[in-house]
Image 1 (cartoon, rainbow, N blue to C red):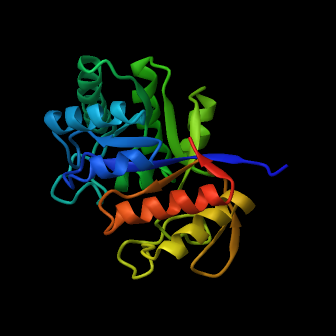
Image 2: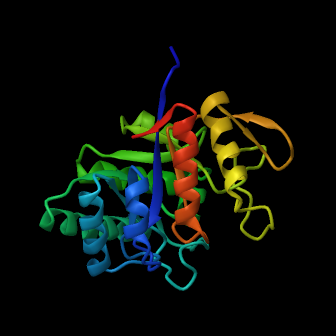
Image 3: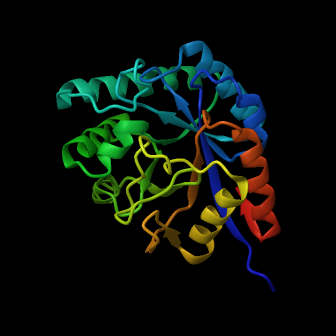
Amino acid sequence: MVEIKAIDINVDVGEGIGNESLLMPHISSCNIACGGHAGTLEIMRDVTRLAKQHCVKIGAHPSFPDKENFGRVIMDMSCVALYASIKHQIRDLLSVLKSENARLHHIKPHGALYNLAATDVKTANVIIEVIKSLMLPIKLYVPYKSVIANLALENNIKIVYEAFADRNYNNNLSLVSRQEQEALIHEKDDLFNHVFKMVSEQKVKTIQGCDIDILADTFCLHGDQPNVVNLIEYLKGKLELNQIKII
């Protein structure tokens, strides 16, 4: 009997692209921008309704409060200011979810905040403290072998290891900088092979040509990636042909 594996596919949404209605039928969880790098209460509400309609798990996607740089540049903020910003963003989404009778499933930091928390104890600890203060049974999407993953486990916060379907990796499991030409994966077969290797072998091929161990239960595609809808449709179909279900 063929073993059937199951993974989650998540997408960053509510970022002003407007393609959520096309994405939702093909994904199993989403990360809704909540005002830091993008998003308004109205957009959060519209995306929440779409997620409910398609039974997609809802996550908060807080960021450095920096719309100008789309949250992709590290900001020099005190821990107190960062804590207040992240908590405010998540509370805004929670207010929308309450009004729509929807539940928050997870939190996934965005962009520079996500990458910094993977290596910086101080930043990771701010995010952990925000989650603890919410006192909700929510999960945290984190990179494998990251600082924030270890801190979350130490604080009894449930984690879900995440990998990026449309981003290339370095040998230390950091993402290739967006300033580099090889940062993003655009071709659908390259995307499938990248994800399939991580699922079936628990390894990722880095741009340095090495096979590095990695664990992931959820795989992210960026909602602002060109041709993202076609990429997700193809990826989902090809994974299911290889006995990998999307749940």
